[in-house]
Image 1 (cartoon, helix red, strand yellow):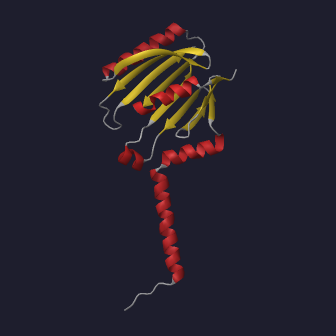
Image 2 (cartoon, helix red, strand yellow; image 1 turned 180 degrees about the vertical axis):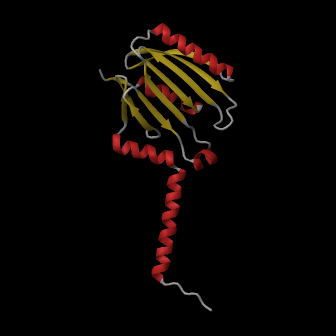
Image 3 (cartoon, helix red, strand yellow; image 1 turned 90 degrees about the vertical axis):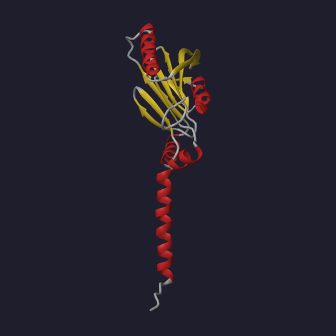
Length: 185
């Protein structure tokens, strides 16, 4: 017995299979898809705490009234096969009643907690973000189980706390984003 399939059904089957394959690829590359979608809707700038940041294409953004989060993830395939770098940048407004000494004390407590977890402090520096000085402390861990080597950077300035967590390859990009920021008020 011969089984015959019409040309129309063959095309429908190929089209259905192609759609399923495209949906799977979009799902495997969801972070890149989300970042592209955000940039198509909002452009390449985001703002929080009186500061406007340039947002590279790799990042998707979550904007809240008092915080901003940039997610620089990659899809499962690129991460597993190519070990592509990942990062998260968080910008949070602090209450006005916190002075700089209180903020610095909080940053020191965070650093101590990270050091107890195996990170090591590799440096501190002052940078300018939208014309304001920010004290930044860099930590490094080289045995992070899932993501490989990771840097964590805490930056604190008047009224704002900024956190970077990600691959060492993206550390310069993080500082570039901060130093390219512009005041909005």
